[in-house]
Length: 98
Length: 321
Image (cartoon, rainbow over all chains, first blue to last red; front, top):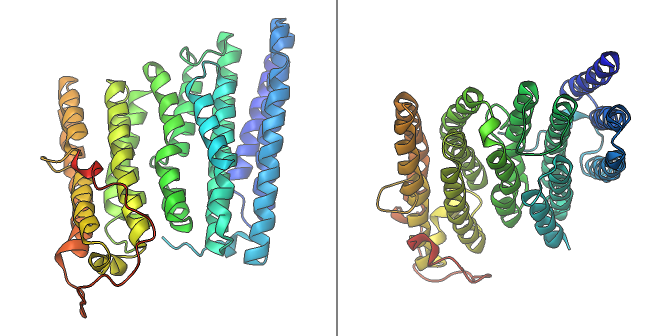
């Protein structure tokens, strides 16, 4: 079982690194966010299989519902930023100088 | 509808004892406030919405991941029983990203700058409430060293970076960061003080944001001519700003005093000295705001009510609390 643990831990860390180091496009950040949620979903759906506790099998579906809403919002923001900024390059997001 | 879903998300997170319901409430809050930020279709607002969405979404995912590792290692999903040390660390980092503690504070001034004043008010008071309740619920299993270092850095950075700002929303963002530092430094020792600090801070920030909203001051230069529009509001704004700074006869001093007292009881006197020294930096820009708003006169002054007051200021009583 620890191989499966390792697989989704590494999937999570790889996706979060991809999210942290995205360089040119906003879409890659959204993709990495989705893969993070996906690795959490896979890990969560293996949990009732191991523990034989069938009352927890509804959890991954709930998480999937919320993450789908989140992804939809992310895409809407992507569209809005493409409308106002012209592209989804991250170099263009510098209007709010600090 | 959006306000209702904000309230719903906050309620869900506050009344949760399972990690997934807490995460769901936080997601509902994030989803509900994104259209509020980007309502004006200004490029800055959309950019603020993008930054806010990305940071909050990563923080939520991190929180879910930490709760999942905790569930794998301990077999239960209760919020108050967080036993796995790496998942405690991840949870602290996730909530720090959500709140805007240093070193994860970089999104906060820009997001406040890009949103309208009432949305900024919501962002800095109402959106901080669910993550602080989660911190309160898990306060006995968090990592004190990490929290203390993040809190001290937050107070330092909030004071330092607020020194060169001319936009009032950014100044309030940095004051929010330093107040969050004050709140988190005491959370492992006495969580009730954190709650008290949060309530008083949100009350004072609400009054400042609403008074700035009714005079529509977004920059320091606009602040200087605000005394012509509503003189009573201006004086109360000054008192509230000084209260945020934490000067003794006003209410804002109370949480600082109690926190320093609690820290000295816990033998952390150097920490208490350091944070009180660092809040002097914040005092500088609060004083500059009060100086600009009430004590100086603009070059061509006209002592009459030039402009209409759009909203009735509701806060003439709250600074005198």
